Image (cartoon, rainbow, N blue to C red; front, top):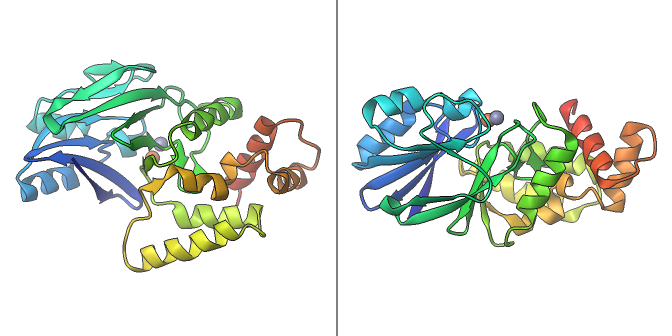
Length: 253
Ligand code: ZN
Ligand code: FE
């Protein structure tokens, strides 16, 4: 199985999982790049996976389903037209057409019913975990998002993370503001700038690299706690409050 990014809109990636002449797509916000790729490559669409209800992730469903009546897996706790297979925590999504299988993870926070798909050494996490960042809290609480990120952080370190936005450089600029002395952040900025200069995506990325550079996974680090307390203007009692203060700061950064 190969996994290919299709750039969409300004900074989205639609992921195509392909094996022989068959393909599965994840979060098709737009049908046009998907249909063009399938046609150019001579691939048949076999299934669709969806992480959450935002239009930049589901907007292509009607047009794709008009061309192929395929199973659509998506969060059971969100109301999304076109989903044929609602899924929730712990369920298995078997995709024999591409020889792959994924386990569903409930990861609320960005939206109330957001799910991720983990399998084949890959994590499709939508807008929950980004490279050096995390999604905005549109529907969930800081405690929910903190727990969802902890759930993802517990996956094997060599997991390759396929998020759905190219936000890495702006996330890293924020990470550098949170921790000006973090040399891993500075090194990652240089590496990602080189990738972007060569028109390459910074996604996927190995999960293990996040622990040193993603401020949203570092709310127990003394330097991060200090910055969060400075931003909040008062002492913060626990990692969730630190996370909330950092997330709040990022919203206005
Ligand atoms: Zn979203
Ligand atoms: Fe999105």
